[in-house]
Image (cartoon, one colour):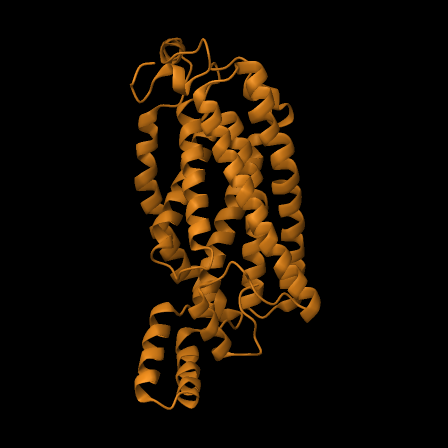
Length: 339
C-alpha cells in the first residue's frame, strides 16, 4: 500500500480512485474538494462573532424583558450569603474570587441558550427544506448506489459548511465559556462530529452525512427552549418542552439513528461498496456518537426521574461545573437552575 496520506486503497472503496473523481469533474460533475474545508475556519469565526452580537443586542434584552436576573443582583446576594456562612475574611475573599471566575448569571445562560435555540431551529428547518426531496432520505441505498457519481449541490454544500463552522466555533468557545460537567464528553462529541463530517465530505459521502446532520438537529432546539423557559421561570413551559425534547431525542437518536443511519453505513454500504480500511474508521466515529447518545439519554432520564419526584424539572445534569452549581444554589435556593 502506498504510504501517501490520501492513498486510494485506504480512503476509497474497491475499484474507486481519486482519478475517478478527477474524471467526473472534467465531465462537469461538481464534487467536494479538500480545499473547501479551509473556508470553514473564517466562517466559524464569523459565527462566533455573530453569537456575541446576537446575545448582546437580542438575547439579553429579550431575557430582561421576561424577568431573567442579571449579574449585579446575583453578585450582591452571593456576597451577602457568603459573608454569613464564613467567619474567616480570607475564606470570604477566596470564595468570592472563585465564584467570580466560574459564575455565569441566569441572563448569560438565557442568552447562550437563546443563541443555540435560534441556530439549531434555523439549521434544522434548512435541513428539512433541502432534504425533503432527496431520494436518499427515503431510500438509504442511494447513499451508495452509483458512487462516486454523486453531484454536490449548493444546498448540501452550504449545509456542510455551516454545520462544520458551528461545531468548530463550539470547540473554540468551550474553552472560553463556563466549564460544564460534561466538558470532555462534549469536546469528544465535537471532535468526533468534525472528523466525521470532514471525512464524509472529502470522500463524497455527503448523502449519508446530511442524514446524520438532520437527525442530530431534530432535538437540540427543544432542549435549549426548555432551558430558556427555566431561566425565565416559566416552569410549566419548561416541563412541557423538556418532555417533548426527551421524546424527540429517544425517537431520533436511539431509534432512527441506529436503525436507519448505522444500518445503512454498516450493512448497505458493505453490500454495495464492499469493505475498505476507512469503512471501519467511518463507522467507528458513528458508533462513538451512538455511545454518547446513550450516555446523554441516561442523564436525561436522571432529570426526568428527579422531575417526577419534585413535581418539576429540577436540574440539568449537563449544566455548569460544580462550582457554578453551588453558587447558583446560594443565589436562590427556591429557583432551580437550568432545566
